[in-house]
Image 1 (cartoon, helix red, strand yellow):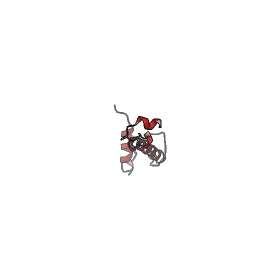
Image 2 (cartoon, helix red, strand yellow; image 1 turned 90 degrees about the horizontal axis):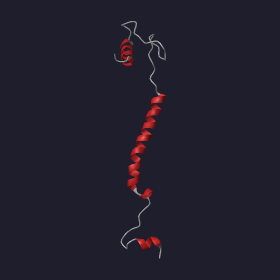
Image 3 (cartoon, one colour; image 1 turned 45 degrees about the vertical axis):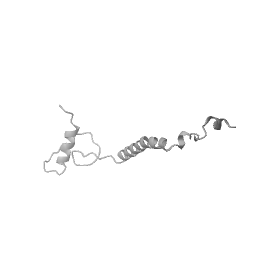
Image 4 (cartoon, one colour; image 1 turned 45 degrees about the horizontal axis):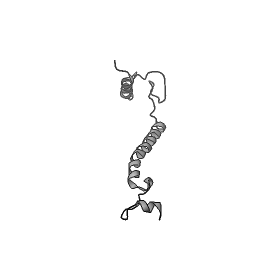
Length: 90
């Protein structure tokens, strides 16, 4: 007689290992999906960085503050909003 069969009752099935249970994979799948989605989001954000609009209307990084010089400039509202968002509250 085998030790495992001696311990189980005649009407009981032997228990399965943890990786054979569907509930375990259901619990693991939620956090795993969140981790994969966050890595994909970080990769998309890193590769598609928004360009900076400078004071002269060109796109690219620049150290000067982008202030609209001409109020009729089509980029003036965007530059004003960018500067307002970048300015710390007083």
